[in-house]
Every structure is written in C-alpha cells, then in structure tokens.
Length: 95
Picture 1 (cartoon, rainbow, N blue to C red):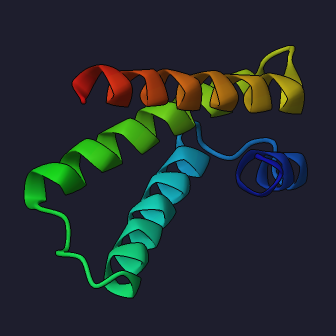
Picture 2: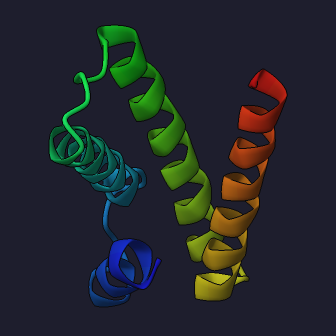
Picture 3: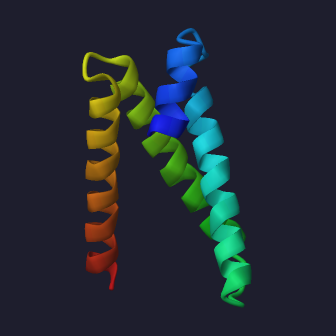
C-alpha cells in the first residue's frame, strides 16, 4: 500500500480516481504470469485473466477510496488485509 497508494497519492494527491487501482491490477497480472512461467505452469486462460483483473482492480479501487478517506494509509492497509482475507475464505469454500 505504501508503494501503490501512499507514495503516488502523497506526491500527487489530485491523481484521477482509479489510476492507482489500474496500475495495481496490471502489476498483479504480470506477477501472476511470471510465477506461472517460473513454475512451468500453463498461462492463465482468458477467463482467469478477466477474473484476476476484475478482482485486483475492484480491490485497488476500494484501497484507493480508503486511502483518500479519513483512514488514510492505515485505512488502505486495513481494507487490503480484509479483502485478502475474504478472497482466502472464498478459495476455501470453492475447494
């Protein structure tokens, strides 16, 4: 959060809403692809790419909204932790 929300929004508080979320989502997708290559796994399907971009972009929007709100960076960190926890629970339910 310090890298994706803190630094950009402290340096340029008037960035358009969603800009940090877009960069965050694309970086996560790139990281996922690198991990797949590293472990010799099949690349994600088109549906998996869409789902991952949707999840990380929606999360990024929530974190950015929290950062811009009264909670600041701590609100963004808390929101990110809660989102990751819920994604983990969803994965357990799916399995």
